[in-house]
Image 1 (cartoon, rainbow, N blue to C red):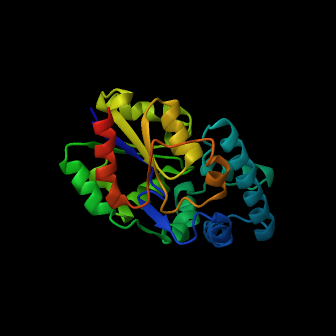
Image 2: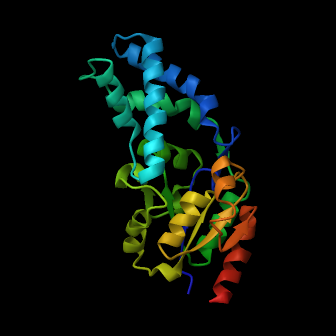
Length: 249
């Protein structure tokens, strides 16, 4: 019996016009971070800091993609300060991180049909949760509120808070524990084959690959090796696909 749905967030419930090509947004984001750090009184060379911070982001991203343990943006920022001998003991870190993510948060929009679909699923008696791979929890919480999605979801699990990333199946444990559901009662819905779909398979849960914004190198690499249980190219198709999954059990 199908009782719960676990959704990814980015490129599943919300989307950005840059199709997750964060290298295009990063110069503006880092510039905003530098401006805030300077406004807080830190002294450093702008270009040296920006180069070191971006290098660390890229290096740690390679690590998180390999061992599926989350490395937070706050940690990366602290490492950069240490490398450059920047004294940041009195820094308001939440404020600095908010400045870093502010521009990128303005680039997200609701996926078509998201609210009507979630209302329909919720009215049908299904429990809904979000499980998101993200290096900053506050950033994700703001995105959820900006999209007015919070009323649909409980719990909301972010890898920055739990220390592991999809496809590590342990990231789903808090949802299953909160709900008291078995894995065969839950379907995972997301856009990334190597994270959402593989994570669901590792956790022995059914899964649906949503493809509205899934044309990425990561998905291309896994297209023939990680096979979803179902494919959805518009959120308004979800109720019918879920009914098919329920009928097949």
